[in-house]
Amino acid sequence: MRKKPDKIVLDNIRKLFILAKKESKKRPKFAQRYVSLTRKMAKRSNISLKKYRRKFCHKCNIYFVPGKNCQVRLSKNKISIKCLECGHYARYIYKK
Ligand SMILES: [Zn+2]
Image (cartoon, rainbow, N blue to C red; front, side):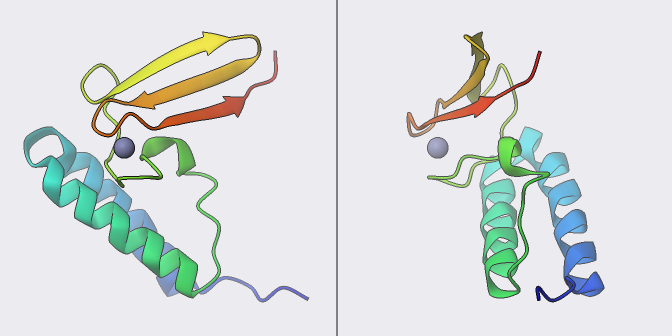
């Protein structure tokens, strides 16, 4: 049976993502650091970041700001997000 996720860790993850969003406009390096900390935290306590997975680059951990550091395209039931920092592509399926 899977253990219930720790409330404190979940709260910290939520707070760090809010901070990352705030910092992403002025200091993207800070946001990048927050995202990498969050990912480490989630990994350690076996929590999925499903809710947030489209909000950052999985390769360089940058927080996405559409129109600034990422490119979003829709094609054939897929959302493809390109990171303009490292060139990494991520594709997600969406339902009609
Ligand atoms: Zn990237």
